[in-house]
Length: 69
Image (cartoon, rainbow, N blue to C red; front, side):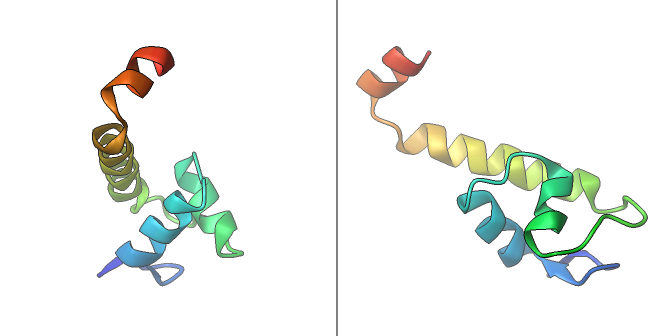
């Protein structure tokens, strides 16, 4: 599914960029060598970032969470 219609960035590509360490919504575009245009994709990318962060927290062992927190 396309997340950014202006640049043709899909949900899978957003996940790939997040797994590679991208931390800001507009850096997803930079990861693929482009820039945000209209901004319509911002909410969906931010939602993907939140979900990515949640899944990373869920996979972190409890002891590691205590040290990290």
